[in-house]
Length: 147
Length: 163
Image 1 (tube, chains in turn cyan, orange):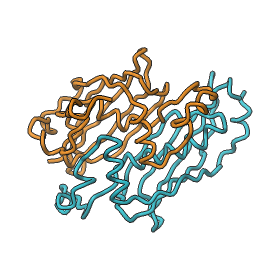
Image 2 (image 1 turned 90 degrees about the vertical axis):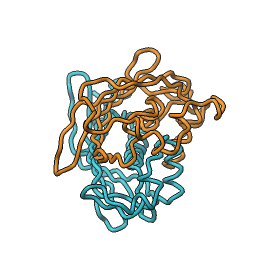
Image 3 (image 1 turned 90 degrees about the horizontal axis):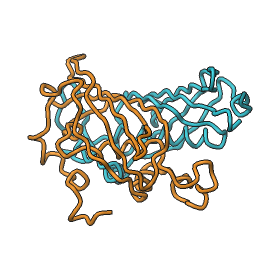
Image 4 (image 1 turned 45 degrees about the vertical axis):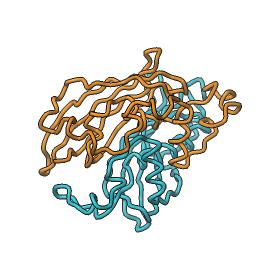
């Protein structure tokens, strides 16, 4: 049905970009996203507590993770004729300036429907201590015309 | 782009404390009630500023000559453009700007690409709210459309509300 889809095997690993957030990259993301929440800018505010949570300093935007995962998916899928259709993420551990993070993916399922060919991809974002800081799940489609 | 002095405050205000008094808190959010939204004409510079902020230099977002030869037939915005649209399409009093709003998770489905020059509209609401592990949660439901009425993307988000 789709040769590009047929060539991809369950278990295929995908490696995404390494990203090292700094105060400047977080500030740049604030400006690019119009999201100037003090969580990402105000050290004094972040010394306080948030109910049960203490961050102890500014944190990277959750949507920074999201865009890095998306970048990995788009860059891997486009040359293969695939289309990024969905991404779900959960953030587990805050990322701070000085951390280094990288998303990786693994094809976990291939599924053909009446009109389409779909992949499900599991994603983890790890930091320099190999801790999983976010998880994601993606769905990609391989349109028949592209195969 | 509008001159900075003429631009509306939701595009220029970087002090999220300033309008805090007019934003709904968790107690006042009514699940199911549509929120006020604003149409936004997406600028090429906005697309590219977001891409650069995540180191995404794919020529599909930067190089018209390259992009015009792809099936997209021109520069498009990356899938994750809803990150900025969430703020360009909502007024200054939208509670997503409340300091201390914490993202717990999001899911987005993609249909057609947004393009520079598109006039983008948002239909949005809080879908649900609840208390879990002593935290105040809201589930958000957001759908972005282009000027042709096509869905660009639809998303669901979980936030923990500040107290």
